[in-house]
Image (cartoon, rainbow, N blue to C red; front, side, top):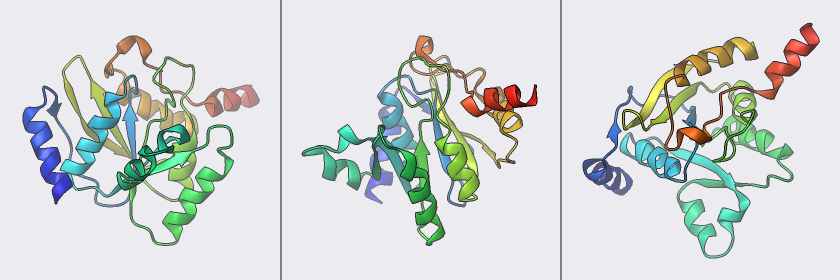
Length: 195
């Protein structure tokens, strides 16, 4: 209730407009993209709190050091050791299979700087835990943010990512010059093997 009230106050005062489809009715992977600024995190939390979605989110382990650790965990954070991320997907999937009910906010660009590929962890978690992917967005051009369409992944990585790319094609992020095109390394690997 407190989080929802805080989020309502935030949206009343924010210059950003919340434009969203109805909240997901089942645990989902909530994509936060384009991820070009630390403010993306604030916006995604404000969206989740306003829509009363129980969420966890992934953050680099350095955010959880010292006095920030308890605060970040209280906000739903799960630390990620980027040098050793192998067990993370399995851990999240196991938590879901054991009956924990939560949605997971993921920023698959993995960095606020421009890159070549999105991180594929969100895709593997969604497939292995049978969770739909909800496309959350930040668009500076229109000053809108929110949750867009829900995608049920098929396992055909290129076809699934074509849907994701089409959705984000006109979304600029806070800093458009740092935007990374939605593409997974696995897409290029698959096309190399097919050729």
